[in-house]
Length: 498
Image 1 (tube, rainbow, N blue to C red):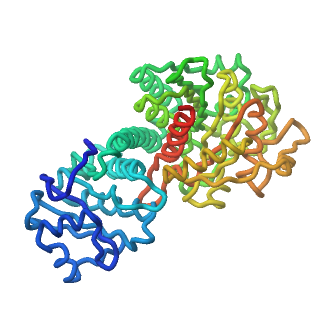
Image 2: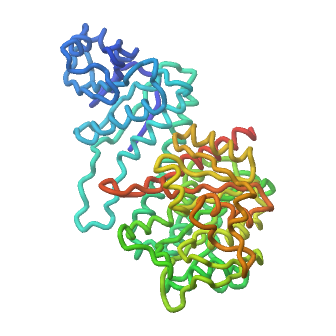
Image 3: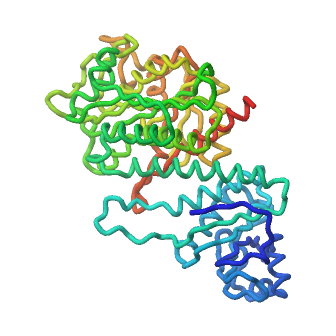
């Protein structure tokens, strides 16, 4: 799909379709007024007949509007003008995308970026349009013998703005939106792949392919390498599987190497049976999504490389399966992590933290500015926050606020939970330095408390994406979150430096 941002007026656009907004009570936006004047009141006449009132997400596709050079005009309802915020803008764009899917429209000129949105600028609107358009175009057909036909016939979108002074920033926002959408598509593809295909070895190959495409440094540690480093916690999860574990690292340098990098660590459990602490069978197929943390950090790396951001970024992916077998870790086993700390494994289904803790220790060798780990870690986070917000826990207040701000800006929100010493008490073990679970209460927090013990030498944040990484039911599939949040955070860091 092609995109462009240009200074333009709706009545002068040729092609398949022009998109303009209508507020409730048939109030025309500025772009809609221009079309109404060009068509000698045609838009107002249609609205007065009751075909559309401007209610949120309503759409009306008009053909052969008098005086217009384009073939169609799409009216989209925006709701109440004084309440038009970011959520209303996003849902309106989804309504537009739905019309594109069902029609034969091949190109469109969208005039929604000049409409005031509470606390949002033109760049934000352009960014969101690109994300939504490309997201609506996404299909996962790779594994079907007869792939479904492409939902979109749309090939090109033009975004019209009236302020020439905003053109350069608008073009930059568009580039960023397209790059983030590409990163999300990669994350979705990796998450949606069948677990017999997307194995730790497959993830390693994908990382190497990204490195080759964008000229990055790729390192893949094998079992013998991890044994030498003392990664006993990570390897304890892998020992029940026939698939070899991998520790994957990608390095991107947009600045001189003396600048400290941001390190992203993504949980890469490519299938999670729970191990000996076996999960119930209903919906176990969705445990292929337990590597969505890995998918999201790889997607973020792709987006950063596409944008050529002036930042140093390292991505680390501990990748393994968690399977039950005669060689699998048993409840009650004690393992030694790379940090030297010992862990009593009371539940083998709390395996994500066991692979992440060694990856967090490994991250220290890059002398990071900050480390952010991303993981589908706890069902408790789904109970606490549902499928709306990602859970956030950190040992640094500024880092927490920066991530929360990035989530708000990207419409990929997170919510902070506490990291108080009171919760650390729940991880006590009679037989090792700590247990890998803290009981049913505050499960998301105690999981983060566990990880915090391996992140004491740097500023660290943990994102629990168990509720946001994928959808179940009829719309089952990976969401690509939190690629927008992570990428926006990195963009903001480059602006802060400059």
